[in-house]
Length: 468
Image (cartoon, rainbow, N blue to C red):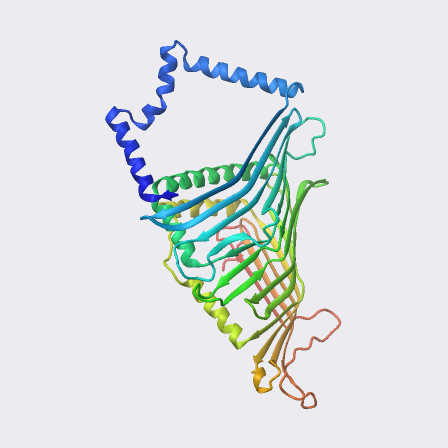
């Protein structure tokens, strides 16, 4: 049990004890150096000995004399976060294991996590107490393998590391009230808040350095991830069972590195198969939607756009009734309720904005998206008890060949949008009466566009700025 009041008292006791002893935090950290001085060992000697020891170990590994294996496992670990003696949330991890193997050619780390469950304990009533957990508890929530390779060693694949992740189907219930309460608890609890802050800063700094190295072709990682049907539940009200349920389908992510005439390039692909959106216990709003993303980037400074990718989507067929439309509106309103959260201060906003502008100036990208066709059908639900058919089709709107493209460079951006045809049909009228309300016809042999929009923005001061 992690009680916020108890942790705050322990931290105050620790700080008070150090103050009474006249030892500050930095002085306490320097006590080891003082012991070394009393024993006649200076910092340089300690550093030299430590460095020499590490070098010896490294030499043994490179010579193939030493192999290292470390394994660890946790059967069950549960933590309950408390506020003022009342339970807020319980997090439980089960059947976790990890194994590390090191050798001269590199290292391998593998492991799995049986399940990770998050339960909301702050509300006595509610239909969505479990916020996160496996849908099939006989599976492991995640398994992973990580390989690191030594450049120049035998069998070096051309990249420095590889990560393989497979995640079983999990269920995540998103409610803004719970997320805000959890965020507030973490920010107010002194120890967790401090740890989270330092971790976020370290991760951000590491990500910044890794991005620079990766752009120059250093520290390349091959990634292969597979997520099996993650389920996202969006309740309209926690006190009722009404919700929208999004099945994100099977998600595959993989990249590869190739050497061509223009230099080295990274290719990456994301495939999403059979996405669905439905109401809890009801009909589908979207069914079996496929999404694909293929992209590449040149590795090296000043070589073309940083990223270039194409997005494709299967035919999008949607049926929605007035009741489902109202449910979607209630879910959107539930997302918008709650207190606004300002993550950073004014100075940090300026710094973050400057960093974003610097990234935007140094990177360019090009994106193209194509939608073959989409249909939106409006239906009316009838009362089956009164002899109705259950549903009555009212109208349908069809759109074909939608193309969107956007490109950005340090001095300009370009946007294009085009639609080939739009049609609206009245499904309540008899076929003999003619039911088309709006029809667009493309004439000519070359592909025609019903709507085409182009926009170009040029940075003021650029050599090709047109003067407006």
